[in-house]
Image (cartoon, rainbow, N blue to C red; front, side, top):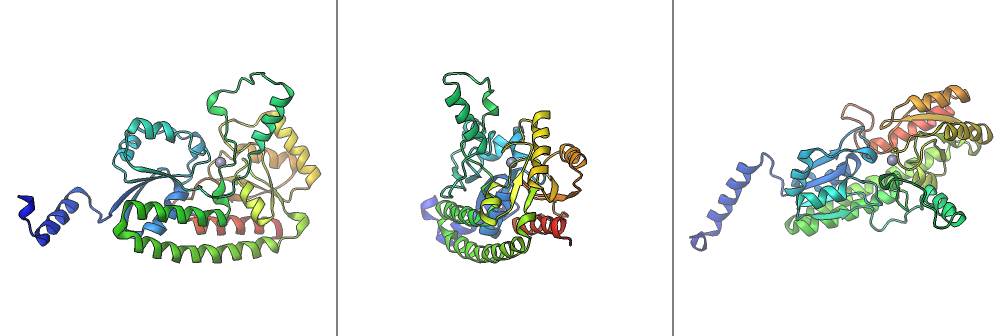
Length: 319
Ligand code: ZN
């Protein structure tokens, strides 16, 4: 029967099936592990993609507990976008159990990764006490590299190119659209980076040390020349100890930190305590590992970067 269908009939049948199975006209079903990747993917995919996001606005991917529905959305996905660099500890097992056939793409692929400071520390311990079991539980072991690569716009350009490649691979008919969309968006990112460098460049060199709650800004530090210190490491999983906090308070006095910030994904209590002990005033909220909700100041990647830079600059040199 199908062989005798004329092309037009077959096409309209497909269109009907499409309408029946989904309210949107999207060609690709995409799962993004967290909000920042979802926004980049939206800019590349436009109307052709339907994106679901596991860790949404203000969510903390380091400690995310998958919901039963997550496995189902993986199963129905065409493309799964993850950061990689061991950021999403919950993801590999979820992908395995879902039985999905989708392409799983690590969007950080190809960036120049920063070695995790904690990992260097552990290596030091291992050399000092060869063969000793540190007693770290498996899920508290962080990766070799700092996963927060999106805090450099330069890296996010690589993310965008990887996403465009992934979409082209899964939907050849849409490739020209994905390529055009990504070029438009990459131009915006280029302009944003120029803006960020100028803003940070206007902060006096001796006022560029600031405090956040966890080490999420290593790539920002490397590429834009601010120094970030934090009581927690590159994951929020392990809470800072009293000794970590005391050490940080000493460091703040030595390095003369200019400002301290809470993060949108973390409980502000620890930062407030450090602010009290050091006499620094909390300078606002930085968006580290997640965007804000739609009504917040950081509901897109570009707005997130602008909001962070404006918040930092106002706290240090005044609005
Ligand atoms: Zn983080």
